[in-house]
Image (cartoon, rainbow, N blue to C red; front, side, top):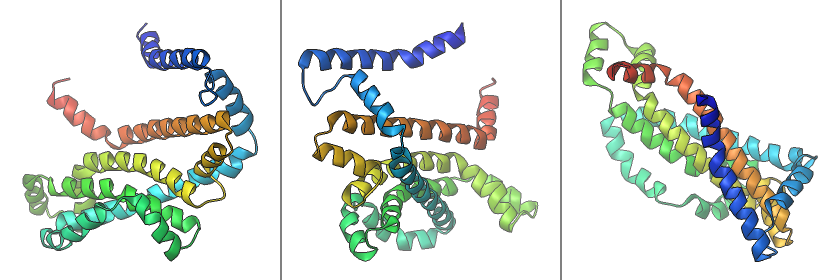
Length: 257
């Protein structure tokens, strides 16, 4: 019974939105607002073909590559800056300057410096996705309990064991929050980088459909991006629950559950 209600809760709002969209597209008669049925038919024809391997897989590979690189750099630099107040004070003005620059503005510059290549697209993704990861990691490391630090010192826990057992574990809730935000930004920047300069990918396909007035095809690409984002968020949630299983257990114990 509960499972059925849960499924109904999940499906109800999308079903209502699709019904409203269908009614609006039929009554308006606008060429730029095709019905969900047209989009679904175009979706199946377009993306369940060789185009999936030509456009979708390269986009996903660039997205995951850029996100992974941003994660490694953000967490690594965040740990170093979080553990060193003096170094953090020195680099903070520079970090704030670069953080204030919108990543799409860097696309023309990166095209000149790196060229129109996969490296440029990865650099665009990293330039935006790294910031929430970096800042959340810094704050997570800074928030480690001093009592736990003293306890580790008393028991002689130092070096790599101290870093993995205390620092990373204590900061992991905020690190995972930063990674979740970084993933959302990475999806956006993946599309933007492909719209600017690319010969393949979802962003390139969508902008080409728009320029060619292939409206159902354009909408099908947008729907595919939404489904991709939903699937990645779902997978990330599973990883997050596994990584933070201890944290949720501690919170449940504190609440007496």
